[in-house]
Length: 318
Image 1 (cartoon, one colour):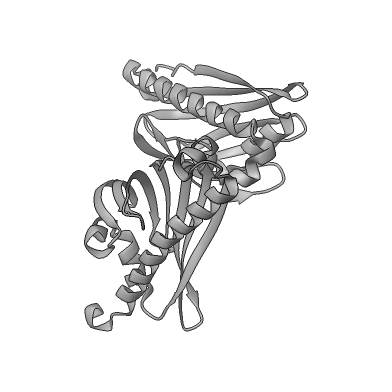
Image 2 (cartoon, one colour):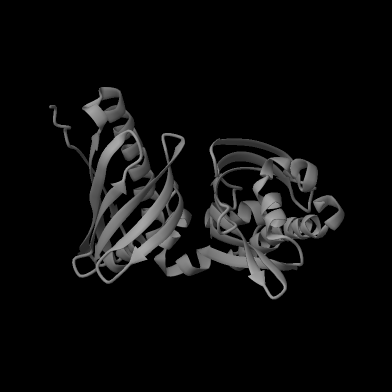
């Protein structure tokens, strides 16, 4: 009986930021989809003082994978160990360690270690995992370095907000409207084009052209993860407009009084180097925050209104 070989990789980067800032970004898994390009969504399954269990969705070599992991944070040593409990094929095992080392004031070395095994140790599968691990690790460390080195203004670069409507109608119809995004070009006026692929039920990969109030068209690409049992849809734009380095969001349908509260939530990381080229000379972060809030809120508000109309259309529901 053959024994699967354990393969190991190591990636590191030096960051001009305090070690505590770097560790804090890694420890906050709720913001990983916003901060790390490959990460689509994280669901916290369990958490206690010593460990946390997570369900993750992320891209690997342009495919969407999901798995559950157990993490053991050690803030005193600034290390986080992780091990996938149910790895995504072709993996049979995957784990590793984040190591944060203080170099000076302020300078930090961040190291990301992985070890993994694949079924049968097939060469093509080993190469696939090595390529995905290298691509994702390089991307994650690069984005983390860029964010951490702006740690003094990070709170201003990140913008989160939500809009809601009250609906007196069936939750199933609201969720159906939000889930059937392929119908949006016919249902939502600001959507000009939408191409959708859903190879795995509930995981939607889409490319969309949306028209803004000034008539310009923006092309975005997104991955959506749908949870029909809780009537939630979370998403991440994998290709964003130039003013945003990252954009994640969520549609949710929850009971409220005699009806429903339907909410659209957005989180954005702004791209400061593009503010003046897009908004004009003298534009600052405050102006960019106002612009993005208005633009995203206008489109999501319009979609919420259409979802409400659709759900409350009793004639169409019969």
